[in-house]
Image (cartoon, rainbow, N blue to C red):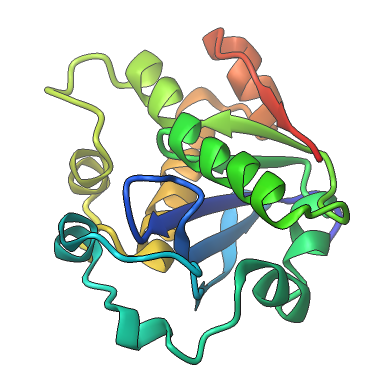
Length: 190
């Protein structure tokens, strides 16, 4: 795989976005989702009932799960994110804030610098007539059914949405797509 984009999604145990309890990702290469996966994570923090109600992950579900650094190391996620041309998320400000806070929480010096984009900002530009641009609305627009707030499925729909936007504009480079839409890219680094 030469160049690829990674769509990510985090679920959190409580209101502090650093309390990542699930990490989902999908790899997009040549406009096709080539893999999707997720890992449950011990956030090493208390769960809030409101968050459990949203994503359905309970403390017992992560009792034997690794903490974020171990999960990322064992699943090759440092390399996956570091090797991506771009990392995207739907409402990237939330997910990248969670990642930035987790980097500080765990002193993840091995975290590569990543360049990221936002599919919600792109969708507002490319699908202006939709009533909103929430992920479930975008999935419905694409004709995709999924379990919302499941990290793997959210990342998968994000990747499908990016692929659809690339086809719609006939732009096969996600970085160029952001430029075309006037959406600035961000960076996350240690």
